[in-house]
Length: 291
Image (spheres, rainbow, N blue to C red):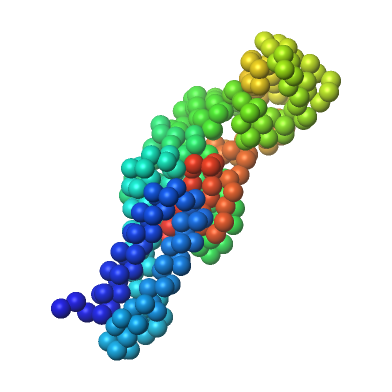
């Protein structure tokens, strides 16, 4: 016969799986799903005491609240991810299993490390974490590739090629996409697009469709082209020493070498809360304890 403590364990895992199923089918955001999980998790103890109270007196209240914590969270993520895939809602959840700050490739929920040639997380495959306790204090998303004489990585919509002491960056940005517009605004200042497709930068530079503008900032040469109505193409050639300076600093926060790989991190941070970071509306990273 199953012991009462084991009943609490399986009850909590089953309820967490149900929360994952509901969250996936209903298309809840990670914040909403995790809030529902926490509510269900803590409700298990008083419900269990009501059902099997006389048999749980010696278990201890704190032990009951901690029972199946890790297994419940894993059940939530696994069922949630499965439900998302079956429902076709397109939300992507990846994880990092660590309790320490550092640089890490992202992992799938079932523990597979995402390789350097994969970019499933809105164009990224790595994170740089600064943790406070077990919670996120600061986070950057980026991409990594095997280091070579010419290493290329992709940060979202931006291709970055590093060779020797030089940096080449290029990308196409759609001004109707909020994240692209905000980045181009940081790069160029005020932007106005007219009905005929003409782009005006800071009220002074006018670019008709197909026209380009070149600007020089120290060792950095930047060419901006109004490639199509509402679409900008940016190409930058510079040096590794200028990565922390404008205009490269609009795209790159830092570059690191680790384990024969080159990690390049985006200048734009994701939004995070406690242990979950939102890279875009459909992509999230959850920081899990190791194991």
